[in-house]
Image (cartoon, rainbow, N blue to C red; front, side, top):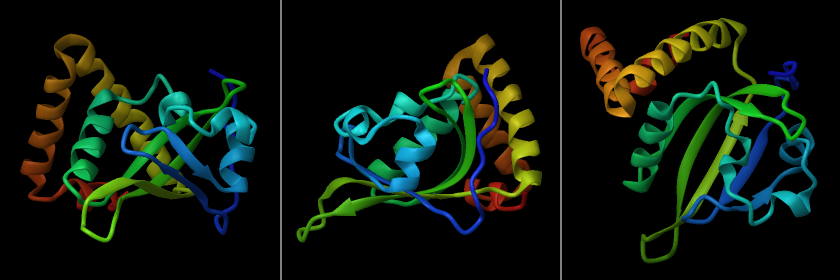
Amino acid sequence: MGREVTFAENEFIVSKTDLDGKIAYGNKKFIDISGYCEKELLGAPHNILRHSDMPKTIFKLLWETVQKGNEIVAFVKNRTKGDDYYWVEAHVTPSFDDDGRIIGYHSVRRKPKQTSVDFFDKFYKELNSIEGRGGVNAGMKHLQDILNSKGVTYEQFILTF
């Protein structure tokens, strides 16, 4: 699907969503790389950018983590409006109100190292294959088995590549 779109190491893609994952804000780099105009993005579900190569397992882990009030770093392959793609290292955090309630989510994404892209491209194909045979729960079990065998958390695992 499409060609890879890249961006500079010193550029950051920023977006904010509401509790339902609808886009409330995107910086210029987010808008430009997505291929959508700002009007098309605002109010749209963030998964408008979801690439079909992304395993459901990773999004399940991401959403479970941030909905519990924790932050997460994940490698994500996104899709542009024109069916091109781009890889990001996404740091996703919940946003809180003054009473400590989650009111939305904030993501800052940067360009990942090529070694990370190479690893996760293969790893995500493996997870997708497992999900195809046994569903997202099988993918989650496979991921957890890998983490347990290495004695690391998900973030420790992904940051080694």
